[in-house]
Image 1 (cartoon, rainbow, N blue to C red):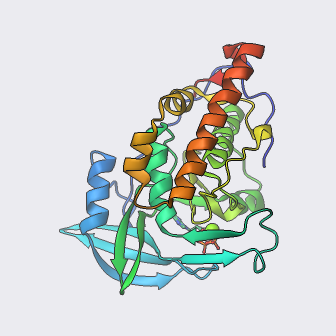
Image 2: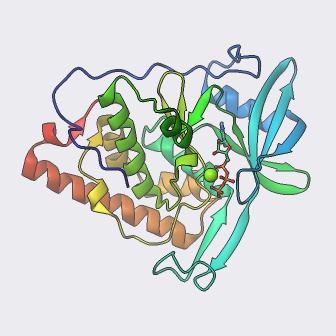
Length: 273
Ligand SMILES: Nc1ncnc2c1ncn2[C@@H]1O[C@H](COP(=O)(O)OP(=O)(O)OP(=O)(O)O)[C@@H](O)[C@H]1O
Ligand SMILES: [Mg+2]
């Protein structure tokens, strides 16, 4: 967990630039909305694929084509159940899943709670493997690469707040795998959250240490999060146990933040990007 002090301190907030999706040639893709991009991901032909060798579960980087539009994507297909014996470090859980379907669940949930940091992703089958296809974010560095290069966002508050959104989102989705390769940073210092195949633990436990403040849109989304919508949009990807864990964490987080707001005042807890 990354601790970020001074999140709600005074000072002009630096807006996140609106994002434009780029093709392999660096030119903007012709999509007017995420919905259009999702449709492209569903329909595009997978022209070629290469294994992303860095990973344990070897997702593919794929070239997509539909009409005269080309874009890169990432195809993930992991679907594993593990026992505690095999993964002793995953404390307290008898089993967990490592599932490509969680990518879709994380994206759908991000949309419900106004978190605009998860690249669009759909369900796809490729090479007889059932999995998910996500748009490739061009011109990024991973957090590992950022640290190695010794670079940092000149707008410190923008950076801290995005990491706060990430940490709070990880509590909500029960993510245990936010390593530095799963954080992408684009050329405008927007942070992208990727690789959620080890999220959605069944546990209702929340680490409230990470929950010192919250971005306003996220807070509004979290309070308005309805069980029926979660079941409708995420039901295809999660088991009943995973769904219940998620809904209980959401409830716990709302109670936690309401208490913080009562104690400290809203201005100390809720901030706007
Ligand atoms: N949507 C994306 N856009 C740009 N780069 C991506 C995207 N998805 C993955 N990558 C790149 O590929 C790398 C590996 O992908 P990913 O983290 O999904 O798989 P993994 O690391 O194999 O999974 P695990 O963390 O389970 O080992 C990432 O660290 C990142 O550099
Ligand atoms: Mg990864």
